[in-house]
Length: 204
Image (cartoon, rainbow, N blue to C red; front, side):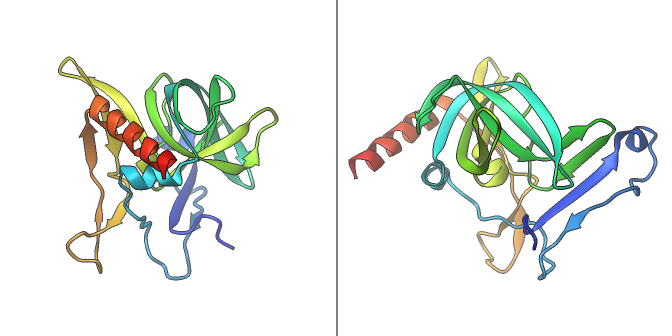
């Protein structure tokens, strides 16, 4: 049974990659029976917040990668600065993602953008069924769509949503697909709109 439909997973030794040789040692590719590439439904802000059980703003403080069921997972500890939806019971939330590096092996997963240490982020999360020893694990909604990270550009703070590694249905032709794009968003209007939408949901 394919646990990760429409997902391509590549595992390779770091040493071979550094030597510039071809990555042929180990390639694990999980394809659905239809053989299609990785296609996901585009999600706007309202859809992301409806799907998320937890929305947090914070900073990636630590990461751990490990093998589980022959694939590599990375768990990032995010220090919570603001909890916009759900209950943040501790100062940190654990975010689990497919991919990462363990020893001499690394794994890349199409459509997954791994969190980067020290980055300030806005995350739309849902609680995973898996649990660590001390805290629940969360996963990002809509793959990289639910991950926005802060950047400093022209003396201003911005939020970046990178969907360039995703295939999305074309808005002009539903029978075709196109790569997503990178969006540069102003944080204050986005957060105001997000909080207003959440207030309306509580009222309804």
